[in-house]
Length: 165
Image (cartoon, rainbow, N blue to C red; front, side):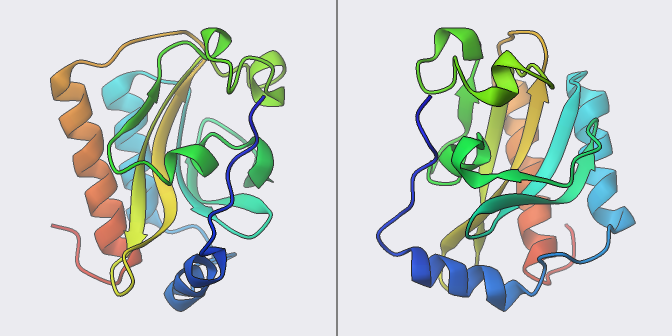
């Protein structure tokens, strides 16, 4: 397993996370609507709006899991957050970064992951990810990718205090 990376400008990134004042806030229906839409549209087991904290990934919204956070070092979102494009792992068992990840070899037995980075607008720092996860390997069509990117953009707008468009 390859641990989630820590960027050289982590202090600036964490300042951006803190500016949003979102960590450990209560669930909100407006965010849950986005993850519920993703579950339904993609027919996947899990969808989250994830904020990456110093040592953990914390879920502002989560569908399909009882957990509200995981260790950052084993997180898929900790990798996806640094991708400027959608980050897709079609089969986690065939990807050396994740094949022996605790969330792959044990519950929730993730076999597919797709995530889109979310940024704090003032600094353009990545602060988290909108993602979907499934227990079966899969691929995404170009239309699926566009739809997931649009959901992530809505989540980013909402996290940055802008009205959902």
